[in-house]
Image (cartoon, rainbow over all chains, first blue to last red):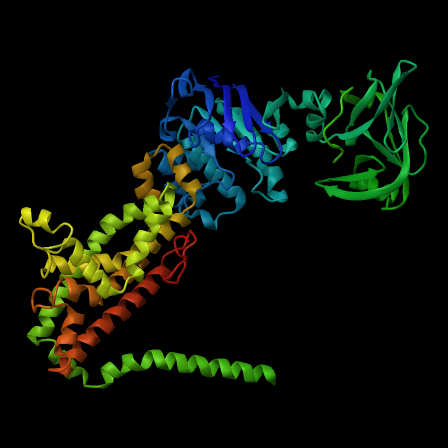
Length: 352
Length: 276
């Protein structure tokens, strides 16, 4: 597969600069908090804004080279960019929007994206999902060498999102060109991309498959982005395990090796909730009143003491849990990961 | 009880306001019979003035669009040192008393003016010619178009321009296929206002171009000239101007309502001002 290469590009942002080196040869997602400069990376690749320095090449063709003062105009880069709000031309019909990119083969794209019945409609009259399909069709009608997607799912309501996500996943797999998408949502990134890069403070912290990121996050930011509970505490070795005393006095056991100031990551789906103390192999037990019950898609997130667990609505009903009631949260020592050790951490990242 | 009193009061005030605005216009047509008005249109003074007005207005508006559109686009899309000064310059003729504008034009392009000797050397004499009328109209009416054009260009979504570029369109194609169609409503509104203002131009024209029948005497100048000689002709010309103004306003409003409004387009002629 042809590749897009970003070499040491520096993108100036309001208060800091984003530095990035990245080879895009499949579907890659960049995730990070808003304001991390993700959109600016896409605009730099498309030629809509100019990096301070670095090199951008596609298939070996130089699109941007700060040192040699080369910067191709956007219309001379073969790039398909799907904007966050889709940026469809409101004064043109769906067909005309696609023909804008390619005059004679609009029919092919109308059929491929199942939007032929909308060909005469105007973008303001379309639903979110329809608009996205038109935007994708239009971007691909340009026959780009690379496809860029800016927050592809954020303009959709939760109901539409699940379906579109599956559709988009299949589409991106079949394209055969490098895809770079940016999003603030790790789940979207994990669902759509082969590899996910986490950007924090203008820096690519870790890039790996979604499974690897969840299993072995490099640092607390990556862990919190993948949805983990983060527990700050002080670790001591005992019986080949590490016992971590949390700030609220709770002691958590982990199988990872650590000493001193540590941050533990534990995923909500690895935590079991019960009304009575369980008699099983789990080493960690937290007994506290339920602080909150929140619905996230088809799951329920329950917060007990310092941790949040995810269970199904069915389990919630079966257990009859309510806010304020005492309950037990249990998880295995082997399910916890030490994600930082021996250094102080900026702020508490426990936002799960 | 109190509330109905208030709403009655508001209605009464509104009626008085509308009557105040409508009465003079009605009076023009109420003064003589329509047949008599039509009859006056064959009066040579009226006919000549109408031709001069139409000719100079059309040329002046064409120049305003030709020069004003790129200028407005530049001011709307670029920020550069002196931007505020440039916008002020564009708006200046709007607040300048027309007579002062006329004197200023004379001081610039007149025989003894700033560019007078240069123009003289080229064998060009401007004051008291039909060209002078066109210049006066263009100078005084241009802000109405340019301001509206700046606002219209500023209202077009920059992402749409960006999208056009990434789809392979160069800046020129982007301007004509995306920017212009989206700004079109605002541009037409601006042109209508500018046309109406130019047609009514009096002060600057009489200072810079004089009032010579068949050459520089536009409808407003002819109205003034005929005022104490042939009041019926004055009324006829006024009637023509009123009808043109009303037609412009109505046509515009209907046109804008008809058009699908994709971008932030307002039905009001005076949209948000450009800046400052």
